[in-house]
Image (cartoon, rainbow, N blue to C red):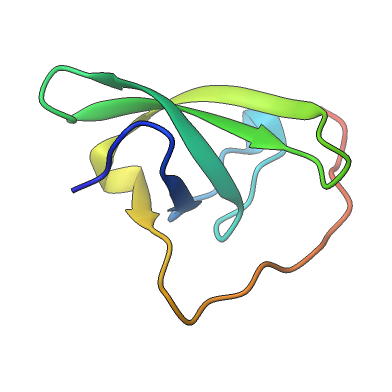
Length: 76
């Protein structure tokens, strides 16, 4: 179960916000019984890139053996 402040992985791209599947964000708010959540995506320097409301099916928990990967954020 995903909780507030958990890191999550985006399962599908969100081109409107320049986000790609695999991007990692932090849950900042849960809606209802966790059916949807507000996720903040930040650059590696700590600047907010996007805050997006996502359905539970669009994110997954971070796996214990996963590492992050850097890419340049495309402006939208």
